Image 1 (cartoon, rainbow, N blue to C red):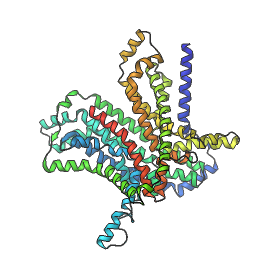
Image 2: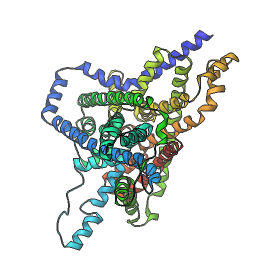
Image 3: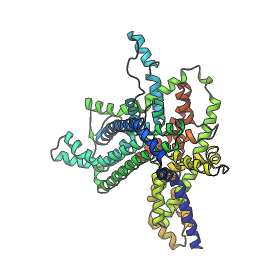
Image 4: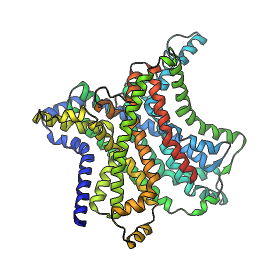
Length: 539
């Protein structure tokens, strides 16, 4: 009986790994079908669009790296090493841009700063000018600013965690040895936070490369936009697969860099002592306090407060709030919540199975499956879409009556599958963090009392995992509601979500109507940010 149950669990794990890895494997397998037609398409792309995709994506990554490192590091150093008015409030306020999808920030600033926007219109009227007052925001530089404002909290959060471990204690020791403040920051604090900064930057760059909403709305030639053009405009699955493979290689390199930085971060944190909490931040006053406060408040102002105000202005400036499509908004909200909740329950169930198996019977198979699952979140939605639709085309060409295309594109099956590939990793991380707080001695005590296997999970682990499981459900729900690239392509007919409608209405320059679903996404995105800020305050 025990052997049968173990065999069943292993079969379930293999099926789960296959389902979650298939889109990635399909994209990689597409290169095995290399032929003259594939080579011709790749040569044509190399002489036309590929240099633009590479150059634009590389420039965007460089600019975003500069932006997130500067804003995230400065704010982390400020709130960790210095004491100034409203420091406690800014500690959690600096996380607020995490609630803003990057494409919503892009819609807000475009509406306010474009040629027909209120700022340029007011300046032309006040100064008697004609033409543009300042350059168009829809450029690579504008996109880099948008991504930096939306993604700097990755660097801020990790750098602040690293610095809070032992920075104050070492800074105090350096001060007693006569080191000036600038040297203490440059030669003590920043080297300590370097692995965290690298890990946060890698996460921000993965999000940048995976984005479709900002690049498509701004009309810039990135890899993700190129994948959709190759598939939907050029009608070339081979070209889309080749571009997806190149993007996947870049993302895997970034993921390896992020994991290496995280391992170094854990090592440096583990060596820290507990006496760092006895050293207090340096108290500032006067002009220095005002400057540090301004440096911390600007990212919050530009990354959250102003975009929300701009979207509210766009919402209220039309024919009236009552004339907005409230009935359709309710339908979009119900669809988004239903997809998010259904996916979250499946993702959390899979995460619980994996985490419990890793706790009860750790083995090679479980470790490999968890590695496959963890890779999914780093894979851009565009790559997952190509990886799901390519085999559909192969099957349909071989067995036209199979109906595979119908089940994956005319129902929510393909959409939920794509969500699971990306977001099971989010649930797994939260459940694993919960298991890390469950002492192994409880398992030994339960076995002595005759409780083992999944009965232990139900009777011993589950009561202690309720909060991490609830957090995992919330995180997956919010991520699914904000997901745009996969939803845009794989959603069934007449199944519109808040993210899709915000994108489509903004693309049609109906920003007043786009503000309604955009603000709803921001409101939902605030929930995990509040949860995260409460967790940080407890620590």
